Length: 114
Length: 113
Image 1 (cartoon, helix red, strand yellow):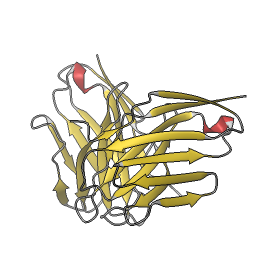
Image 2: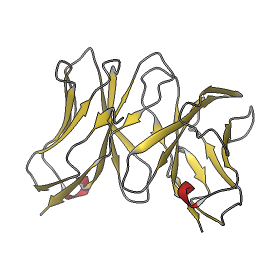
Image 3: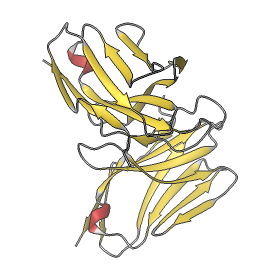
Image 4: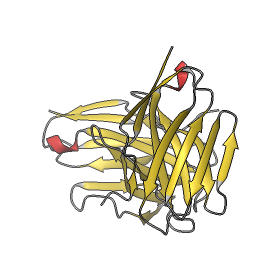
């Protein structure tokens, strides 16, 4: 009975490197959401994807950030040329349908940029 | 623009007593509300939700109340237990859209012996 899986759990990158965060939704869930939590803040929505489609990316920074959810494999959140301000906890959530239903969260990836 | 607000950053309650966590929202389009519990270094865990067509939803020790006219909801935990000590987040969404959740900043609950 696997829940939402995220890896890695911890990721350290130097400024300018790329970070790739992976998320496998719960079995039977086809909707994936990414959120970011900065220290001492709540979670902020970044992007909502279904298989092979980006549905809403209104919370994604305009540059350096991208997300995908391919037909096969996990969803990937990619951050290019990381900066110190990207240091945060990144959470993935999944739901079976959209429209007000509960989202179930993974354990998160803690990104530290040195 | 903080559309979902949790004005109490922390709350301390004695074991066995009632914990009341509050949440206010400003966006009248929100029609579905959720509470999540979060332990350090873990992801949020869904607790309970409520649709705007209801004013109360109960699940065991947890009850959520919604006052639409005041744009206010609250989570009641009775009786409080030490294992309830965590950060509680209120979240809101608009049904039928992309369903992104808008979170409050959280309230840290400590249940003391």
